[in-house]
Amino acid sequence: MKKHIFKIGNKETVVMFLEISELFNFNYKNIIAVFDTNTRKLFPAVLPVTEFVLNPGEITKNWLSIEGILTKALTSGLARDSLFVGIGGGVICDMTAFAGSVYMRGTDIILVPTTLLAMADAAFGGKTGIDFLGYKNMIGTFTPAKEVRVCIDLLNTLPEKEYMNGLGEIFKHGLLRDRKILTILDTKYASVLNRDRDVLTELLERSIFVKAWYVEQDAVEKGLRAHLNLGHTFGHALESVSGFSSVSHGEAVVWGIIKALESGVLMGVTPPSWLEEVRAIAEKYSYNLITPAGITPESLIAALKKDKKKKDSSVQFVLQREQGETFLSPVERSVLLKVLGKRIIRES
Ligand SMILES: NC(=O)c1ccc[n+]([C@@H]2O[C@H](COP(=O)([O-])OP(=O)(O)OC[C@H]3O[C@@H](n4cnc5c(N)ncnc54)[C@H](O)[C@@H]3O)[C@@H](O)[C@H]2O)c1
Image (cartoon, rainbow, N blue to C red):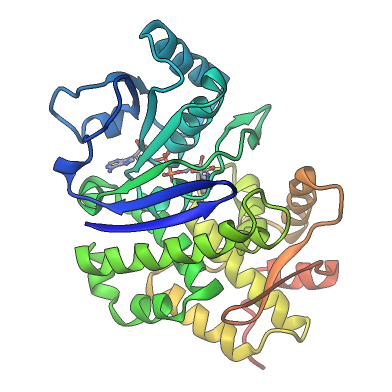
């Protein structure tokens, strides 16, 4: 069993790579396990826990679900020394950890991520929460899980679209701090797409180490951690303009990464060769790097401005000088208009 221990704020998170048969070994008297209807099906057996099963998807990431989890915990006699376990994608992990973080002022939380995105990103790092009044992740806490239990075999049933979502975040981690991730994505393309266990284990371990480098230094997102938003500022704008359905999150993030690098090239801070290297890997995985038809640069710029809700300052974009050299900067409207058009910016 592979095991890594990280310190996030004043708490420890242990990340473990386990077999399915090991996932439900818990040392607690009272346990509530939260699933969605898809992730509950991954475990056909009767489980030695109190269960709470939600409908799948972002639509359930709300107060009502939290109230449901907390009500079930209370009526089942859970106390502060009980355990909240989230078994699912990012939605279930974020909500279970949020519910656990406020139940009787906080219980232990263990997360069992079942999507590639939750394994590479959502389950680790301490951000919990729900959507509120139409804004994503507007309410929540910073509460790291005590353990994150990763079981690669759970990915066997994951739909292709969800798999590609998670791969987008791993790609981002490679750009941020681990060139070996990019080399694996580039050279082991078939194994990555075939969900090869060993290749995925290495990608996920490396990915978690990259995220850990940021969250261990900046547990509550005061600065450095913002680099993890590479591709997300542009990506959220695309998701929001396209109505959060036609473009998947992972696709939007990879598109956003290319837009960030193209902005850097036009601003003279990013070498065109770096943009081309990144674009070549993204194209290999058939990510759509062109702004979809019918979406105008102006509508995307309007969405980018709306996205600054969580900060009082102007929109800061995550840009790169090179692999591993990341910084925040505003981007002028004239540059945005160029990169958000359909034309592909290439080395001149
Ligand atoms: N806390 C963080 O740091 C953080 C980071 C990134 C994303 N997030 C959050 O994560 C959420 C997105 O997570 P997601 O992409 O995992 O989506 P998700 O949780 O909605 O899961 C996607 C779909 O896959 C299904 N599914 C999950 N595991 C499966 C499996 N093994 N087999 C078959 N189907 C399976 C789910 O039922 C769902 O329909 C967003 O709400 C986002 O805000 C949080």
